[in-house]
Image: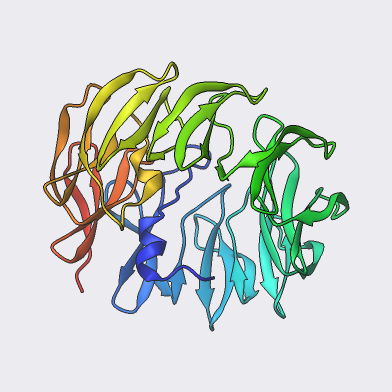
Length: 326
């Protein structure tokens, strides 16, 4: 698994299972365990590395290989893979012998390792790389869209962004172009709109390819909660689905900005003010003061933040529930 220790925390994933607590990976000494939303250690540090829960399982590293644990700490999938990705739609991409395949939640190999790269399943299909081209397979491992794309992203709303040559367009599950390749960059659809770049500027299109919000932004994030973060010049603000500003551009840019954290999650979004990250509400009011050097989005009421060189988990009030000791 390519994510390093810091990124494993930063990209925090979490799950809830039959009313049990959400769990979050933490490092204590040289080993990883899991805390709940109150900061209580519920799985003692025992792993070489650990990721967040997704669909009831979390990737953990032991003996320099990866497997999956459940919330009780039971190894449901014994460590055996050189790299793994999170479970999505009941399957996880795993790498062994330099090839990628897929397993189910029992650890059974469903699609034999044979691909040079593999993404998660979305809407029943997964993008996989065969030699130098990307294709799409179904959950039986059958190729349903032949290798032909320079790049490919996951399906959403029945469409997937794909790149042919230097241009991006969108295909449906029948491999038919619904929106012809024409964009310099293209994101997946979120809330019926997709951010695309043309002639160096970002705008938003609908599922028919019609421009709904004109090309005008230096950067544009996906919509979440009916708003999206956009950058004009060196300042970030937020727009609604009609392209009108809900929060005027006023927040700082930064080369290490975690793009996905710009979007609103659980009513809060990360913004940079005077070199530090803060959290605002949808009215632009600061809810957690700027003091962090890095942050993740809130998930299930908890976010990971870096403060004074240490990683912490905070709640929605900005209170620390767990702090890295070394």
